[in-house]
Image 1: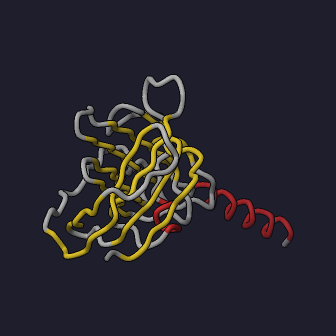
Image 2: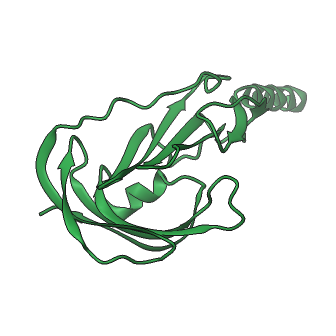
Length: 198
């Protein structure tokens, strides 16, 4: 009887180990796709993720990045966007649940640029960790909340982190939701406030 129980336990461990999901793991700081090795995730992980980010600002080349890995339990498929008068930050996160399912690239959904009636205070500075309101922006599409953020941003090729601060509008409902969508580029967040528009 003991040998049967031991065999059954070993069989169940084998089955459980076989149920661990495999995800592609890679990172690229200059594009929206990357390729890497398939890695067997921790047995508690049931999904893979791909996260892409884009930061555009008038007069500068777009800054892209992609991150593929095993998915944390709190991570959900979502699109996060924040915008200022002349710039846009967006991150797309896609979660999938089969072996190697995050190998294919993902893409940003089109931006709805229809005015939604919400207005937010506006400012945008590089090289500082605060900015004073210098105008008002009219929000578009699903971006219905206001954001004020100051943080250090890691830029490709830069010798050190860049300080940024901005006020604009976002699709995030609260600070916690926005933090789940932040790129690994953001370091040392000094201020993050999300509020209803005016």
